[in-house]
Length: 466
Image 1: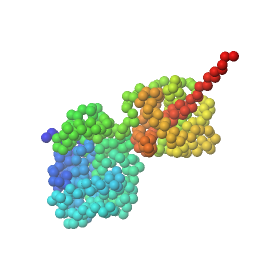
Image 2: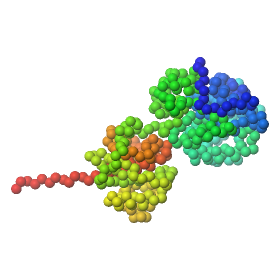
Image 3: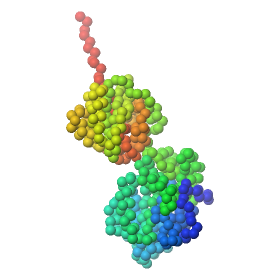
Image 4: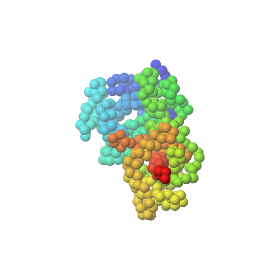
């Protein structure tokens, strides 16, 4: 058995504080398996009592570990600990969706029913009333959807949030707005957030981790590889994985590495955050399509796109040189104001008939602004968008496009993900992506428009000799 690796950061234990952690050292899996060393260490610190108040020393606990570390087992153990400890206790569990929360809750609860703890509680499985209830003290453990109104008029002593990396900032703030008032009158209140690190979209969870490092009232447990470690080295992964040598072996790591992309493997088993779950194309192929050269001085096609959160408007230009599109980001404006005026300025300067705009998405307001200003533009249909995105993908994969380097385009490519359009069609997904992809959308549409607007050669007319 290997030694448990040290966490990357752990709130120091203060010896003068007693712990309730020992009360749960045989409830980890619901099947009687003892806690692993990292789990014991985590609960020993998370359940410390402040001797001055008699309450938990850490109202907020953040646990970030790689996949297959025993996070689910620790969740069940902690929930049982609180349910057994507190009279009329209220423990709530949530995850990425209400369905996920209920399924995960039942996955934990059913095995626990056949342990010695099974006689202490009743398990209800109703679709609208799934819960564990302890008969001796009337405490309850229940799942709930991660919505702002899901705990309205409820009370809670412990709130468990699983898979926190999936929540966007707005969703997370709504969830915390639901949880916080329920704890106001409960002296032993605590919130425990558990998750593997996420993508660039996981700003809320990653921000919590960073702020916790300087907050003595937050317990942070964080295992995983460092930023300079090689995620392809399985020995490095094993050394940082707290369950390695206990429930995870080298064969399991090898199988996971074989089945996952390098980025997803680093995130899932190294607990290293990534820019996006999957890059839309290999980084080396994208790199060969990039250039620092300016777009050639020739007839140009413009396109514009508004980000889904409406924080920026990207404008791109493209030309076709020897059958190969050459595109660049011309401007990225904050918000949505001034987009039509800037497009009017560009099209007049370059004698262009009108930019391409997707009226069906967030750019609809930009299109309406162009209508009001009597600025002609080409309305991109859903088919145009799908073709433009697919064509750009194919061209990057084959090296048949040139894109001038721009920070907004680099960021968009790192964040981009696909969405399905049905019947095999797909496009860059605004909601599925880990950030704004407006620059990428504008470049793809400009390149498509440039290729679409290439004039056909004049026909050769042959006349017979007189």
